Amino acid sequence: MSGNGDAIETVDVVVVGGGPAGATAATDLARKGRTVVMLDRERRIKPCGGAIPPRAMKDFDIPETSLVSKVKGARVISPSGRIVDMPILSGYVGMVDRKDFDPWLRARAGEAGADWRAGTAEAFERDNDGTAVIVYRQQNGEGEPTTKRVRARAVIGADGARSMLAQTQVPGGATRPMVLAYHEIIRAPEPGTVPGYDPERCDVWYDGSISPDFYGWVFPHGETISIGMGTEKKDFDLRAATTELRRRTGLDKMETLRREGAPIPLKPLKVWDNGRDVVLAGDAAGVVAPSSGEGIYYAMVGGRLAGEAVDAMLRTGQSSHLADARKRFMKEHGRVFWILGLLQDFWYTNDKRRERFVSICEDPDVQRLTWEAYMNKALVRTSPLAHVRIFFKDMAHLLGLVKP
Image 1 (cartoon, rainbow, N blue to C red):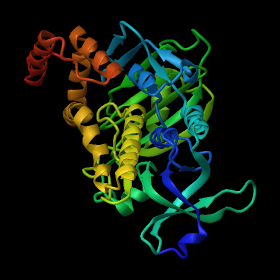
Image 2: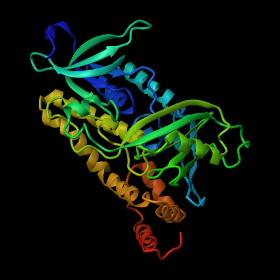
Image 3: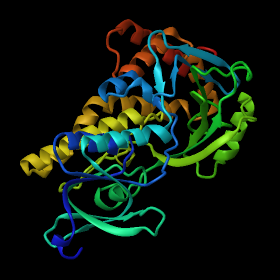
Image 4: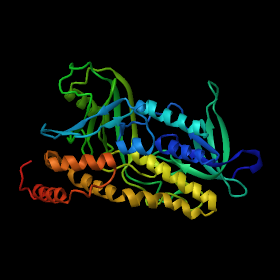
């Protein structure tokens, strides 16, 4: 319990976390006229490949000026070194560097009227009248940080995979499986100086020596490159695997600018709210796509839905609206997450299966439907014959009737 409630400020909403989820929620709520405090740790950079599909740019008004590069296709590499190119036949996937993208999102939230503060949320309390209180540590220039409190009618927890709010306020938030992601931001080579590197292509390595249960990546960021990998295996050396990936790609001599690592949740939590005044979004809620590890688009969707749920709760006084965020997210994206989870659980198990998975990626139907689903964030239902063909090809691979 905190002390006298009248001694500290009270706002409609405190958003804990200023990444894509938190900044989106703060922007939307501020535009609706809600008083919003957004807390985010200063100089925090999330390790991320940085892919922004066209659907995200459209839905969340992301201008091309926020992009550091445009990707026109992908290349997948198998354990044996087999290479399959997957060109995007129309359009592109935008790439961002979270070092610049997240501050831009926070600045937009500030322009909308949210009060962004460089602070770290440390505890959740309740005032004498039961109102939620967020205790946070705020940096004051070069001086010592000070501990402050702010009361809120509602709280959005967008504070990452190790969310304090998920762990303390939401059932199941304290224990859940994670993938550890690690990448290095390196200087991009001059054109033509590193054979095999294409600044308009993402390379994905399905190789157990690079990642025993996920994948390694080389994602172009204009003047820089994100190169890294992820794994759920706690005893696997992420740095050593990334060093090996750099060696294989010929990027080992390029200057290293940053090294970043963080946990990534493997599946959405079964509950996102406390039934009273707290709702989760982004990594805190577990909305990272299985198989691909994509998180930016889904984080922004989760942030928007959390903001709308909180606004409905404040407008009606009914806390039951908080559960709408998860219900609406899973209604639109739950099936995709389920399918991607099955894909990861089966094809990423060992190198024999990874080899077959890369072989499947050669199929034109697989490539077309994969890109259409990824770029539009919806299952493609307009090509039933293509789905039938893919089904029988998958069965042939599963039964070993086709050589990888």
